[in-house]
Image (cartoon, rainbow, N blue to C red; front, side, top):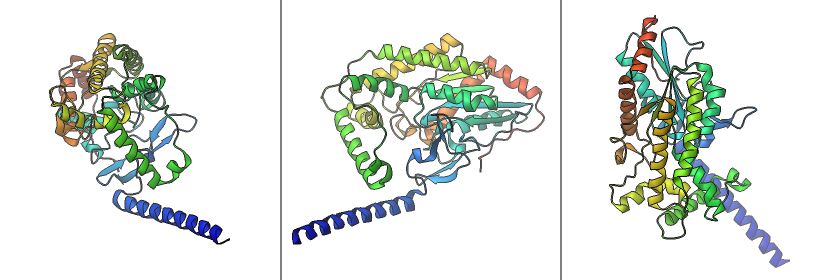
Length: 372
């Protein structure tokens, strides 16, 4: 009996200690970062659909330094009037977290916000507005569904599409699972879903393991990255063609990364850390090859569809201060990205004709302002 009591007492002490640690971690995290602790906490599934979208009507601090404001549809941009008023030039931005830009302090500092603001500044008599339809973890296929279910209704004149990293990760992961180099993607277990302490421990262990594996000489995935890129290209072509049914001009910027072939190897490995989190089964050379293959696919998709290719990527590619990790842009990076988009648009005769046509029917000054 005495032994049984000791066991029960020991188990109770462990449970209480765990609950205390959980409460402490949650209290400190919420005090530092606010109500939402994970980017996925800011999202939900659309009713009757598997499409993940940001929560509507958000006005919250996230990550300790970012102010996230969304409109009634979950776009990280100021609300736009519907139906679209005469004399309005409306832009829509499709992509993943690199378009949503949770690293930027507010919507006005994201590259979609900066593009719209600069176009409005250059044409003060023209009303310019935009929707940022970028969503964390989106693939090209998700953006195609989002275009149909959310974006087409706002009647954009110009659609900008920025994709590559997530499609590369998913395409290679499927092959890595078959090769026994990665585990199948699965839903989080009950404990991980409900315990922040356990989630943080698991996340930290996975990150450390991924970094060790990414930089190691262990078994790596050997695959035809060019063939995967051709699949990505076909999906991108399909998305451009769908967007062209809604908008008069579709824009494809080439993709940039923080890591670059000109950097010393140790610097490359450091800047590949975020990519290794998802693709530790690729060698550093394969990461370069993969991103470069998908970037070439973007150019081919533009050629096949007549989309406007934003080809000038040199100022962004490998610019360490322009990124917060492997692919996500810092506020400086957003400024560089916005500048290349704007200059590419201004050099495009089709865009100039489009803007002049909208300007001819404009009846009020342009307004681009932070929502909320």
